[in-house]
Length: 468
Image 1 (spheres, rainbow, N blue to C red):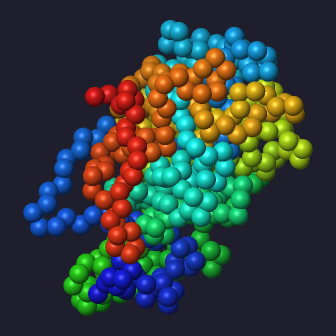
Image 2: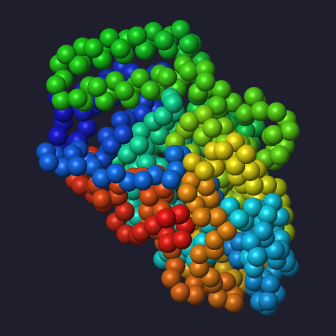
Image 3: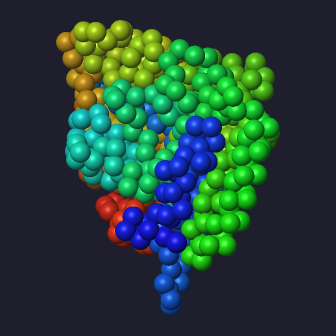
């Protein structure tokens, strides 16, 4: 029994309306959908193409706010002082490639990175830029929360794994506006990420922030949760006896995986940073960015398929990366803030530890890490000592999961203002991730009204990033 006008199992709608299986208000059963549940059902005579995958998992290092490129991956030491600032450039492990001195930990690891210095799009608006980057799709101001994230599309195509949701955001609850940008959009809420943070975290310790999403409600014990699972299983049996089109089986798998998440000791341990040694936690940095990167490492080591590290809004300094140094922002000047542990200094340390640990464990070869931000910052330092929004160019990187390390894609002009030659778009970033995961972008997505929609409306894998 399927409501074909909505593209959603009617029994699923009935259960949600009656609120029968809310798991005590947990509300995240839907993310455990079957692979291709949000995709395209093969018709008679169709065959699915085999797409070679170079990655098994993805970690998306999402730094919303606009990370300064000149003070990080694209220094301009020969530019005037109002462009280059007071920081110098340092040689990386790749001959002829220099990073800003703010990145002493990543510079020796440049041989692992596929660096893109000409990431560009057409909006200096935070929310439009964030939605564009997280989805790979051009959006209007009215579409900033309607287009599905890259992680949501990956989840719809590849499903959950080892008891983990197909898309996890850590913590997934920071935001500068009224809503978070992390959404399944028109694919449906079942493809929203599982957010580890629960309620919006600001100054909680990270070991508490990242367990909020797993906490039971006060009156929901393990025994009561198990009893609800038993009830759910009996309902599944009845529904399958009625339903002949498979929607009941899909619903069963969705809710079953949610119970697995809540009840599996192995899954819960992966989220628990308290199980790490003090030395390991110190190496990543006792900062929000450090501990979130450590959590991402734990999750992919345990089998999670797609993890977004969310680091944009900080309780002490506002939006960490939006460094205008405008009145009301509690920021030092740009060339000083990058030295702070909550800023580039902490990100440099955390990213390097993440890459090194995955490399040492052998997981880097199958885990693609993508550093992404919605835009760069203005080449010229403003009168307040900050840099403003600059969508025309910025720096991002890929590593692991089939990435060709030691590569620099694109170059900017002498002031770091515009690309010299071709630029790379959010659609190109999305297409590169899908190719690494072996997702066939020729098979359309199906929205909740039954319309076929392209996985990548515009964009292609970035040449030179992935090994051929």
